[in-house]
Length: 492
Image (cartoon, rainbow, N blue to C red; front, top):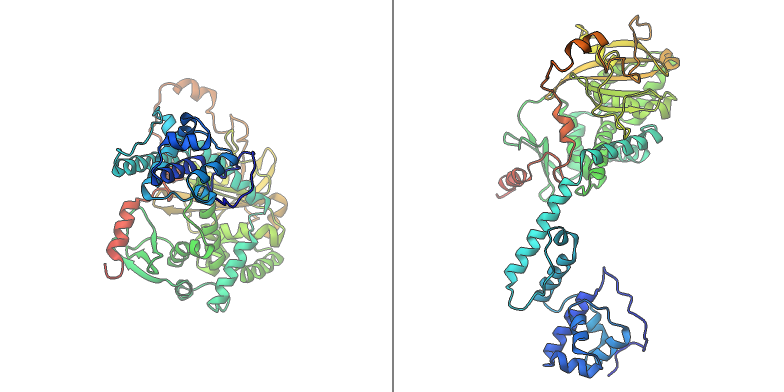
């Protein structure tokens, strides 16, 4: 019988993604039983011992091409029927999946020895085994993002931001394209503009009182509905809509790793800022302010009706690329813990052994900590700080959030202070946080008096813990989210 291939004694180059020894062995067994042949009879027909044929059918031996041709002739079929990557029936697919699972790391880690899956084992048992194996692997995936991995991901992303001066042209072009599509006239984006973006993307806005507490918004991609909370919350309603839709604009898929989750979050925040404060409008205003030596984060905040933090972030996106000014940014919790940071001006932030800044204690003499002691929360606070690698000028504000008070500060090297409003401040500080005795270690007299006699209950901002993933969408109760969507779906 014509097998459709030429004779060769070389081993068959199996591709795990197309066909493997398990699939080939199972197809040979099914074709053999369909012809009414015993294992011994097939072995005799191809000149092999029954034990050898058994190992081939069980996927434990890789047959050579010449042997496969002989088997095809004995079974009166084409070689393609044996090499087809798809199993002959659903039962075979189940058996192959279970046998593959038994050879994988999950079963081995549990100490489960592989066993032959006989015909007497019910389909339901095989399906249950696969479901359990899948759940175990899912849990292992969730727990794989250790605090160390999270810190490494933060460090890698910050290096990328520093390399690009925190400016991402692709995201700027995406924002520009969206604004053009809704015929935005220029200048600050209005709430109507945010609504137009939602409509352009095929979404209607729905404000509901029962949004799951673990979410800020939920996009029902199936029905084109964006759910937001009717509860009065601090923050910009435009930003809530844009952040919810940014992943749709950027084509994000469900994150499969902490690196991807973190990158998507940064891209979402960047795109939201680029839509609220369009590059084409902000840059000329900043250049004019630089010419007048009156750059001010407060002016940006007020001109575009955004939060101080959004204005500060956006300034770091544009300052170096368009104004030639290296900058640094800090967000510090009232406990003194750094929650966000960026720098390309060589400022010496405290880091751990991996180079991570988030989670470190900010120096008490740095602007970001001193501002908490200021009674005047209406006006910005400015300060010059002498450090081990130069003098820096910073402007800072304190903002409230659900996690408590945070300070947000933007700073530059002394030589670039001339471009900013507030450069005439008399406030001065000296920080040597690279030296332990600066503020991370108490004076010897206090330490001798109290070491071993104090036991604090540490106050740590929950946002630091929430960055550690416990699923595809960290911190989100997916069951609650799915129940919500089911209840609110059209016709539900």
